Length: 609
Ligand code: HEC
Image (tube, rainbow, N blue to C red; front, side, top):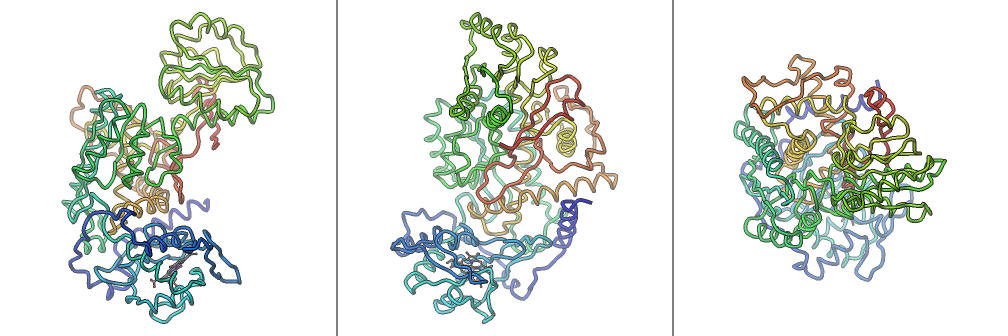
């Protein structure tokens, strides 16, 4: 058995333990009979006092007010300086901590350590079990100084060696404690005692048919969440969640944007002012998403796994937006890597570019990557008037040349008449052309590749067994498996994260939870699904009596071998995040473009650029 499997099984064991487990120290948590919610509303940084701002700089950057890097001692005589020593490295932006290796990092927000309000209780996911933080007896200024300087817990015990010992002045310590008191003080907007307010965003380019299917899918899974909350007794809910009343129903608004993208920011802000949301849950766009990401960053609202192929520039630098993958630019990254790494450099590289924004983005990304390589690269934007000159150019290509096809299915068929095989490489974008064998590709048995971000067909259908059963059971129209399964995952993963957040409804914390636990949580889900199938449930929900005529679910033939080997629950191969990572799936397949699926799959390589 692989080490990975061992871990997963241990996790599963741990989870079953936790479901029935009481908090490690029941005496401490009994006091929370009636946890009343902190008032909603964030604290914009402008309202911080000078002292709090000093504290923030120390906490986040490890710099004291005069710009001097702070210094701390670590076990074994190691000195930490500046950013390395910043509290945020371990206690995180929310101040609510997490896990480092197998060691719990406790919450140190003001309420958590100085008291004054309900105790802060967080779930700590250690590698092999899960537990709850035990709120300490409140610190005062003096005991806080001893903790940070000398590593002394308020109870008198020594803090673990992982917590560095800091050389900080009284003034610096006052600044940090003032900042801690502002951290995770009030819930983020949109969170309330009984209900979480959410929105999803649809951009105007989406067709009415796709819009409807998207909204229907989203509502179906959301309703299911709400029904589960309403009938909590029958569903798995941990004792601590019961005690804290931390399972909440969700209310979703559909924000349909209209007009040019330059006006979207205003539309989004207006909506947020009228009725603030805690997160933008999923979302759908076939063109731009940048204004939506900008909105999330400015308003500090989580943008939770939208279904978009054109991911904004610098999405990896955002704090609040999580994506399935880097979109079509990732295909461009992978192709560029392939072109730059082959031992035999291609002669001329021709990009045929369709009229969509996606195609143009992809082509410009390749151009940027290859700019310094000295490659001879030529871009042709396909349109009717250029058809003749394009055909002439394609005919003139030599065997050492390469062609990149940023074309949709219909564009492909029309424009390649002049193209003669073989070339050194032909790359086809699956985001644009789809994942099926294009009709024209029969002649391309050699050196033609499909670039595909999602999982290969057999494994993908194994991954999506539960999803497809659910679609059938709910009698939903299956129009676009990738998009709808993304919606399904977005809602489920949001639910996992929220339930593990207990009563700490802070956007920073939500993102931190996802960074730290998304892949672990998905692995648990896989095990759960596999187990339920082995126990005869098959993961197959009851079959609907009569299928709606529009719904044409694919025949359900999933290979058992693949079912057992699978690692995911999405259309993507592996999902994982880490601190600061914004894309859950990081690579793409380069798959031979041949009609024999077995060859196509066995010859596929997963490339992470
Ligand atoms: C390298 C990781 C790391 C960094 C950096 C770090 N801490 Fe800690 N901190 C810990 C760990 C681990 C504990 C828990 C130790 C224990 O309970 O034995 C802890 C505990 C604490 C406690 C006691 C909390 C309690 O529940 O009693 C305080 C207060 C604290 N840290 C403040 C700070 C401040 C302020 C900074 C920055 C100036 C900081 N820490 C930086 C790892 C870190």
